[in-house]
Image (cartoon, rainbow, N blue to C red; front, top):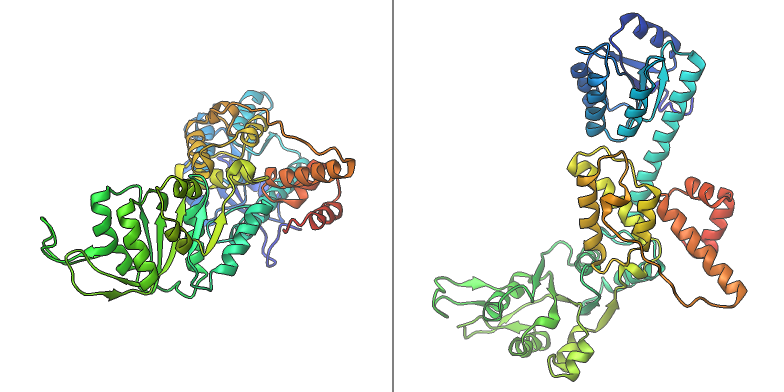
Length: 456
């Protein structure tokens, strides 16, 4: 069978208090290793130990064998512990209501007693297949995440180009200026730059120039000697000196006061610093990466930012596009954040409803990735159903009308390219599901991906 791995039969957790039925199911499903239990406590113990892909769960468990309260409670606990497991619930012929309730809580499927062997085998085989596809998707997602830059998830050509730029620049010592709106991932890119550089064994020191009061920022950056000012009771090393041989990330450099801009410029030119109250020069070897959401060109015109400092910081300038301009990334990030939040929040959610996904794709995300992460976290906490719905997100849909090209071939290419990117993102990177959604074969989808430069 396709579900078998290393010639060992796949495991199924059977939660059934009827010993006779346990034996009958074991006999019928001899291609599988059946882990038989008769109550919630022993079922959860087996679940923690083996994490089986498929669970057969009788809703009528003790101490409520004639009802479904214990079975439904067990269902919810199983999904909390192993959200990926496929639960097939067992009900009586007259108990369709509880079966539907179980499905709404996240069960994969249900079957009635007395069971028909062939139908049960088909349901189980389908459950294993879906589980395998989801596992393949997770592996694919991990590959996708690690390919551009560690910690950065994207399928957008603009962002992939940014990642390639970071990879090219990383081995050098050139100062890099990251430009982009708040929440676009500037610090993630700065850390990626450090990790890909020869300095990756040394410190990565980040400081937000907008978060520290002006009167404290100088001592934070350059350090101070004992007695340099009231309260300076001991010698303190500044962030620049602390980052020696490593990388210094100056976030929101556009908020650096003019008085400190001159001192920072001197450091960048001479590569030496003086602590506050100190008299000696201290050589420092550090790679400087700066970032800002502000328009530095406009600040230079208005005299708020030094032009000579700008040129020192921007030996390489990298513009990071906002989330609303990244094709397919809103869906891709939503799936990734949902997977993470399901684990951290302990909620057995299995994706988004169609309406929720449309809202995610249509929303302009003015707060970018940071807003997306907060929105998904809130939705996971607030959701009552098996999937995140539109109401859980709290988003309004937006009509996004753009100037479309009139050349028919260009229109067709743009439409096909956009549909492929959106389908892959909506299907969480699964080529099999995306081809089905698009109504084309997998070879055709691979051809389209190659044609549009969409790496898989």
